[in-house]
Image (cartoon, rainbow, N blue to C red; front, side, top):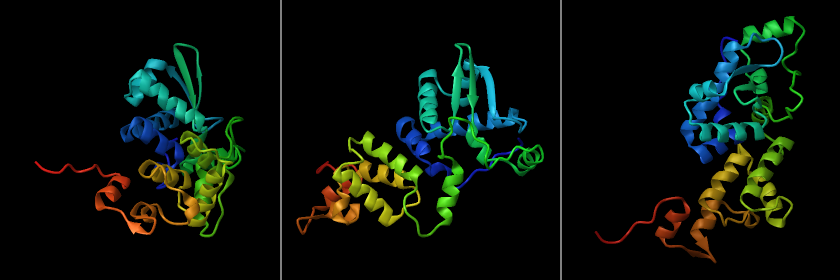
Amino acid sequence: MHWIKHLTSFARQEFMVEIGHELGNATCYGVWLILERIGEAWTGSGRPELRLPTKEWWAITQLPQKKFNKLLLILQDHHVLDSQDDGKMLILRAPILLQLLDEGTRKRRKASGENPEVFRAPSDPDTDIKAEIKKEQNTVKGLSSTEKMNISSVLRKKGIAPESPLGEGWFIYLEKHQPRNPAGYLTHILKNNPHFDPRGDSTPLQTATTRLGQFQPVGEVLQLMGFAKQQNGP
């Protein structure tokens, strides 16, 4: 595999948003280092995977062991990678590469009878980049099953049951406003305004600036928007 398609929407995938939030945006580079190393060794036949000493994977990602393990857990939770560890050697499988093929590899797979559009690892659900491409091509749409699953994951992490009235309110709100990455948009709102209630059918900024019909002080608004509170005096 000579090159990997870098979709403009890749950074907005829920797993990338989670990695940036949990481990810092610099760790997102480690995702591409893993994918590039697996893709470099992959001939295009069968599943994209690579077996290397565990310490070599740490060196490739330039991450310490603890952070590498956390990164791997996030990627496995989102079915981006699958791993098999025997203590010294670590096999990483990357089914996501089947959606990021260069044209040469795609043609070789097609000629060999392996259709990259339908080839999937057994544990790989419909959460790949292809779904994101289709989603962006539609201007009028509801939430897809993948988006609903990702939204539910964010809500649970924030202590909100997806089936609760508040959780259902978030689904309605996100479906109405149609952000490009609903889960990432939800994460951003709850980070800056954790008490925002979408059932009021207003925007987070409107909620932050209005309380019982009265405007809040500028300092409170800036705090809700994520700015640090300024101290008075020298």
